[in-house]
Image (cartoon, rainbow, N blue to C red):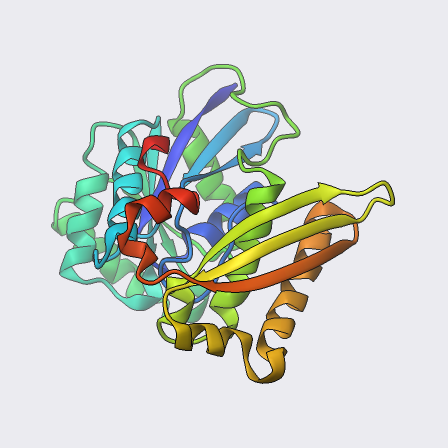
Length: 296
């Protein structure tokens, strides 16, 4: 049997979390069309008869603008140094730029086995694929390139086997029934943040943290969950709540349905919106909201 850890690295919005969710077979990371969706290092475990792959889903590489994104980038750098292999995910539909090539060379030349998942091939001209692979080869990128589509399931078995072949021989790192290292409480907060990312536009979703204050299962089997949505400005709070509270009720309803799927039980959800100005640049608040450098 082969087993080991694989850092999943790539630009923001390259499709890393979607790919990990499909390969694991369950939702272990939230997804949205917006950058900075993944903020934490999340493990997703895929266990098959002959291998166990522990995917380390990392925050997307993004231009630093505040202390939170700086912390996210440090998370990615740390993950790339402490794994058995690297899977670099590139959005083929977005094209191939000089900085893409530079990032691939950086992360596939760290002294550990590496390969490239060239994603979203279902929504791009097929003739672009060999041209981009040729460009990478001529630029000195030696890692094998696997064109895939997570949404359509194209070439995923080949990619998964190639990843497994890079790993060392050894026993499983996690029991067979474990698919993630994150708790249900963590996932509840992430599901709420996912719905906020999907509903609201511009800067508002990126300036939001979700803090779970109450998480308990009653004797009736119903979960009582109370959480705070923390934003950075008073006008953001007004937008999050909406006229007569309609926007907040709608996003909370969507989140509650996914929470019930996750927990397999009914959920009684209470949501408040609070303002903590510029919390993404205040390390004490970042730590309070669960973003801690000492976890890396």
